[in-house]
Image (cartoon, rainbow, N blue to C red; front, side, top):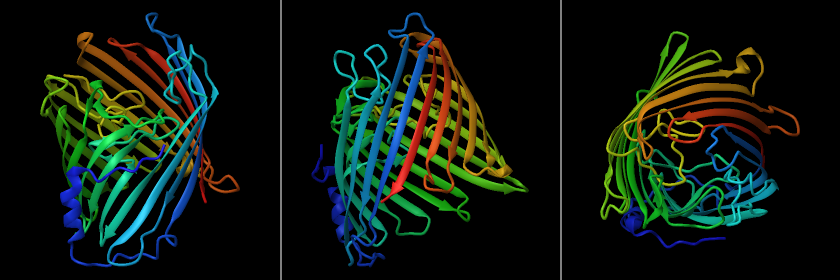
Length: 416
């Protein structure tokens, strides 16, 4: 299904200011000359075995094939450049069953059977003056307060508008509004909601933010604010820094969220503070990470339903330790085998532990997750850039079902 939205009201003022900016030519060879088209073929196997006798299913197991076609035009020459982006996606069931469905690779019918296939398509119009760009249509936002989820067969998309300005060196200013979403296993658009109450709908998600990179690109500071109308408001401060120390490369990612209810407070009272720090140390092919995170207040960390939580310091394959009052830590080890002459081969393993969580099941909840992933990307030959990822996760929770999970993802990107 293709959607052609009207400009969101929250960006009309920005669009007017955008059109009145001082004239400046942005480098452009032309609409078709700078265009790019790509096709990604993605084969996905998902298996989750439940170890809890009370689980509604003993396991979830599905296999599917996806295709993601993207087109991105260049800009027409002139002071104001115009362009068009498009995306078309198709997912096809290879193996499933009513007792094994629910992996979110495919839509599920009322009788418990997964759809044989599904797909969607969308367009986004874009306009550019100098280093400022306005986009309207079907988009995949990747900002700290709203990150699209690409963890299954097809990526999640949103309908809305975004404005990005990089007129000053090192400074990025952004703002936008999204009014609907297509989840990663859906062909349709639906209203937005929060993970805390997925069935309570909002009229839109509005945001604005600024990021400044300095210190020879080694340091970034960011400040953001968002509103999921009549549900919650969220403010976010971020500091990123990397530092060379002898042969070591050190990194720090610090973040602080403030959440509160908004307007009519359709899901009730919201009040939380979430602080995290993710620290890294790299030497050769080895990288070590330590993550620390704490949620304080009456509710958990807030985010849009279906979106990814990878902004948080302790985000993992199946959770991010963001329940009310939860405190957590993570230890992670990565190895890049290019250090021993095998480019394209990567290993990641990590362990995360959370406690003191307050959930619907009660207080003092505990959970832990262990993840391991091995991936390899072909470096040359007719199948260059084909990648294979195999990951395994073990989840244990005092307030939810325990499970073991395995995923195998084969991706083949092609430039057309």
